Image 1 (cartoon, rainbow, N blue to C red):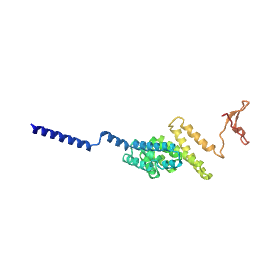
Image 2: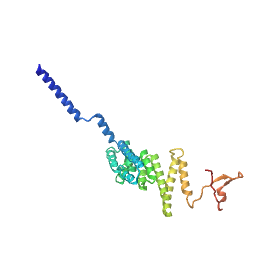
Image 3: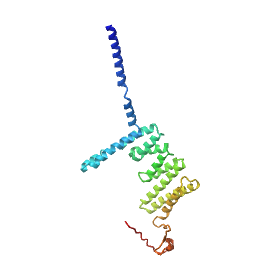
Image 4: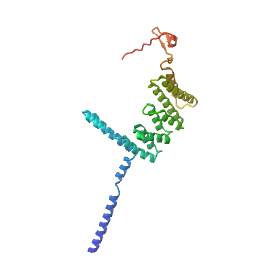
Length: 264
């Protein structure tokens, strides 16, 4: 009887040891889920933003310049975060999450990762709103070049995305013209913008995309052609103090003083 009890206890003990070994070798389900989340593209972006936010809060609370300089230099390394995102995006470049990650690296990353992310984003997502957001960002002058914007225009096949990118390319040329000291160079930039806007207006007349787009494009072209130094001012129609209607063009060839005033 004692032998039976001893054997039974040994079997149970062996089973217990085996189960313990299996439990030790197999990671907990919640740990595995946590690791997956941490290594998702959105998880990496959230991690960066949380770390950056924590440093910013400490920076605002810092009392001395030395503390602020130390905190400024302790900001999260965008290069390392960009590399982690790129690793996941390159493994599955066509996914929507990868598009978001590539946009983040192309706009927030360092020079080391930005160009690679830009090329992959345009290559794999040329017909998406994500690329159009990228074109809008570039048109704002944040490291954008006409070559990258032209790449977006030429890669897209959807009219809405393609025309949107053309509009942002025109906007880029306008901003670039305003920054030029050389008037000849500025004129070249404005002429490129005019050509793009004129093409867009013709396309919109043939196949309208959205209500109001044509009027917006025509207004943009009018501003570019007339609201410049040396341009012809658009006509203004108003009523004088005697309720008589008059137009600015009535005074063409004469010196006109426009007095703008109001109450604040």
